Image (tube, rainbow, N blue to C red):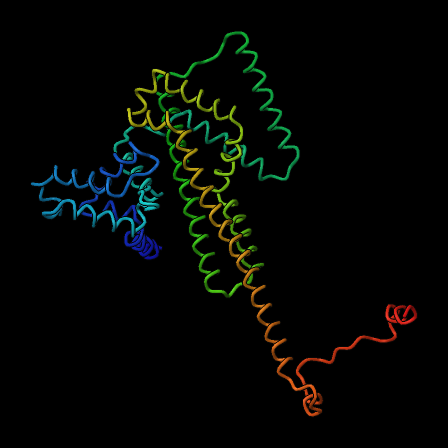
Length: 371
């Protein structure tokens, strides 16, 4: 067991971009530079601007022997950024550098090292207990247990509603409020990583589909089936379901506005200043707009595959028509080259079966009678 874990962890250290970044010598400077750029421009950063920003951060640590920066900071920054694009920490699309899930995981790990608050509180324990109870009931085939659970919920909600109407309700404050705010923040930020994984999955499926098309080993029907089944498979993943649920909300402006209003209310609470740093509060404030941007990239990635398949189908039909026309021309030319006056040519064997019209068919008889 320990040997298998060690092998798996060794593979992750060698190939996972987040682990490679955290273990690299210049990792802290690269991580700090990319984070500041992404925070200021979440929609993407121009490659040359990213190189310049990272080079400037290198220049601030000229005399620090802990880092290997070389003499030409711009050249080192360019080389570092190209390497991390190749390793999958960030991606370059249209001259813009965009973060990936690996970079988000590295940032979350760094932030978790500085988080000293206690997470296993009484409220979280109650949440876990309710989740266990609900899951146990849903896994059970007993109708009675489900009725008891729903009845208990209705009674609890009724008592809570009566208490609220009477003005008797508790307002979260102090440690409980701060814990709830931090938990909402962690869940909200993780959505962006989920969307990036969905986008990466669509782009990977698009790359595979292009290879299938170029190889010319699949017909049009197989390509379309592969496209549809690939989209269905992605929607069945956890990240795909999260994206699909949010995508359904995009057409409902009222729900998005309600979500923004609720976030503003949470950010206006005095406990939020103690629970979150300024950068975290800014991230939560821009959550909806960033999710919309992430979803747009996912939709564009999916539309790209569909557009390529449509082009493949149209080009396939056109090429097939050209091939059929060329074959017919060859047949006509071969027919003209035959000496039909030669009895030997007329009696020569052919690979095509003989074709003739049945003279006893009703249409021919009717035609003959008219004539």
